[in-house]
Amino acid sequence: MARITFLGAVEGVTGSMYLLETGRSRVLLDCGLFQGRRVEEEANLKPLPFDVHTIDAVLLSHAHLDHSGRIPLLVAAGYSGIIYMTRPTVDLVEVLLKDAASLQERDAEWENKRRQRAGKPLIEPLYRTEDAEKALKNCHGVRYYKRFKVAPGVEARFSDAGHILGSAIVEVFIKEDGQEKKLVFSGDLGNSQAALLRDPDPVGKADVVMMESTYGDREHRSMEDTLNEFEEVIETASANGGNILIPSFAVGRTQEILFRLGELYQAGKLRYQAVYLDSPMAIAVTEIYHRYQNVYNDEDRDSLESAETGENPRKRSLHALLPILRYSITTQESIALNRIESGAIIVAGSGMCNGGRIRHHLKHNLWRRQSHVIFVGYQAEGTPGRALVDGATHFRTAGEEVAVKASIHTMGGFSAHASQSQLLEWLKGFPDTEARLFLVHGEQGAKETLQAACREQGWNAEVPGLDEVIEF
Image (cartoon, rainbow, N blue to C red):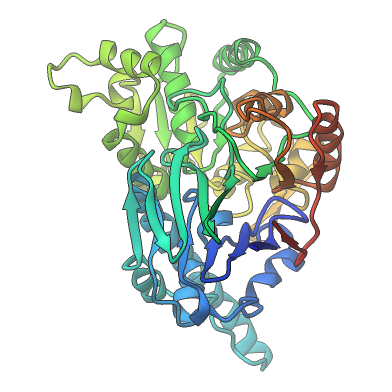
């Protein structure tokens, strides 16, 4: 008898972590950070809810921090085993974990200056750069579709989830008492309308399915309509002389947006002087995307190839599709962008405006009526991005309150997550509805709506609670 304990991403969309236990092994699926409101992030300070020395292996679905961000804590607590992931994920995790450690060190340093002045005890960052570097030594890349041994009686295989570069559907094969049972963890499933990556792979028979439900209660706008609106916003901003700010997640969304801007440029519809990618992390990730074009879908890979003037296919890149793309790496280069009053498209993190260089650009542009802000990703409750989407009249950053006069646009069609119909379509890849289906990684309303839709298709979908244990 095997069992699963749901340790995160069951009461929201962050903190992905699930413990699989068999008669001979204990395997962790994901080890992600809780993100969002302060009360939610405080959960990261609690000790990991298991003895790390008893964990035989870790299977990581993809690099996003809500799935990978507690790996340094796991290793620092004494875990010394292998963390399995796809090969592109190894490269991305290195960038993300080091960046997360740097931000935590910086935040702790600023907080401790305040605490010193107030005579309060000092704090430690959640983890440091050396913790991230130590954890990276445990990361091992496996190619898609290769079945490999994970622990005694446990094997696994990664299929393409189409969410971000290297994202995987995790198939786990459990052998006990002469029988094999199969657990499928969807990870985050991609939006089949999105650029660059392939659609999520269908998966065959399973005994247990754990499926994400981020957009389980809604449909994405069609990509055609989204791109038409995207083009209209850019044309309007160009006509009235304003800048366009695009808060964007460094992994996946940024590369999608650059590709779409490149399409407009190639069609002669992008009249802006320059597109600035103002995020060292997003720049590093974009270069990683260039290295793994073998996992792109055929159509978009052909678009990049046709835009390249050189003969070497390895030189295909988003720069070829979008020649006006400029990297803004240093702090000085970023600050210089604040002097541009018109004619610039600035793509910067963080995607929910709760940190990063985008906050400085918002400070210098939100109060201008000719400016435009385009949100191209999910804005969690409690984040500054969500406040702007919901109509906030003022934005506070660096101790200063800025009036919101810019036009705010939301384009859900760019989501990297599958919509409700796409989730249901993925489920059709299973030959029957006999498997136990658990909905995870979603807000309560999204899970409940998706649960009803799944039941209409014959699935007995269940919504587990935090720390709930199920046996199969």
